[in-house]
Image: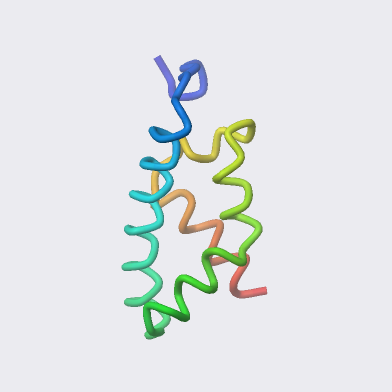
Length: 79
């Protein structure tokens, strides 16, 4: 069964946990790739459109891997 066919009902706390885990991974990637401080990285993440989409449970972006989300974030940052 593909991830797209899975409908998950998460509590707000569970959703926030998933998002926080993804952000933790993405922070590490950005620090490594862009050589930025933790504060700069958090600023880039939390001010991005991709983050806003990931915290919106209707988009389903939170179901994707951190690598998938990171690719979109990197493209947004490059613009």
